[in-house]
Image (cartoon, rainbow, N blue to C red; front, side):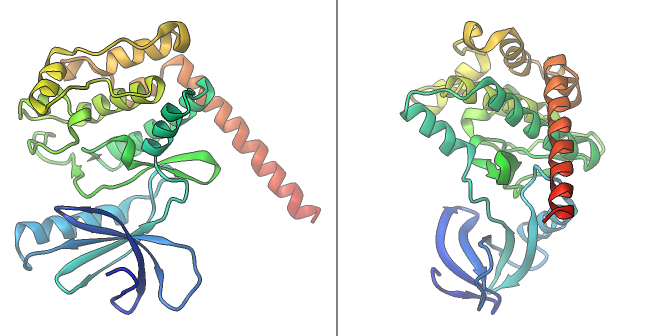
Length: 294
């Protein structure tokens, strides 16, 4: 596939991911020197099958999403029994790589950087949960991407699910073990509060440079998650606000976890949003000045 032509539209440069669902390629439009895109090639068994319907639903869902902190949808088509979904390429890599680099160099992120990233992830989730009624269901550092101006963007919505069902719940167990909530471990119904658990795991990982829940095997990991066993956040280094937020998000009872809007209402995050708005106004004014005075 690498170096191959896909549907006379795109040239696959190299494969950058692979799984049971199919493969992901770095690509670009054929015959152009345009910027790179990411092409996700998913095998679809047959028209009318459950897999085919899920794939089509994914495309319809992606087409609805328009947010600066969500990786942009570009195109989609069927080719050789595969659904091909084209998304924007995030040249800054993912949050997982940033965390790994920080751990390797024995450095930590600044408080300002952590709070900005957290606010951006939460804004994307608020858009998904409250405006689009969608669960992400696989939040992890590998699915948080870095776009221009050090902005964070959520990606990989292949297993997202609409919240519009009668019970407002989803019962399929999907997710990455390190980020799985207790209710997922028990194969119980869950809703948007499982995404919030994953945010707690992400925040912990960013500040501590390790997973909140670790183990030698899956059974031990599930046990640790079910018992809520994780080393506490270093409050002397990160302060009470961050420590308390992690504690609240990693509550065993989903009902006790805050919603995305409740988290964003916390004073320290309100201050981050205010600084972000001020920075945006200054940037807009600066751009306007350059246009008037080239």
